[in-house]
Length: 130
Image 1 (cartoon, rainbow, N blue to C red):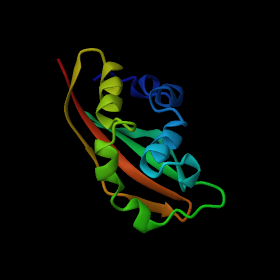
Image 2 (cartoon, rainbow, N blue to C red):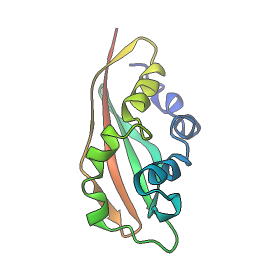
Image 3 (cartoon, rainbow, N blue to C red):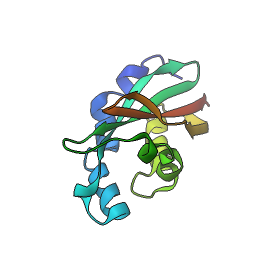
């Protein structure tokens, strides 16, 4: 994998492949009304360990809403299968930034509470250079 990982996964690129309006679309599909959603979702790059890229979906509490653990605990399973979130598509687009690399594995980790207003769902993508 090329050493320029940070440039390949700039915040602008991550916002392009996972735009802020995805949270509204997700809640519209899930709850029938995007204003019912209690958090926004942003994809962030955390770093690289060997061939593994470490990212996270940040769940940020919306004003006037409550981001509760009981709401986000089962979220990794929902996110991994939901067509609007499209984690497999996100993984594919990230891998394309590393020309010739193949995804050998990806997984969403367990929801972690960073603060009352911020929970994260880790996304690890393992690549192999061809």
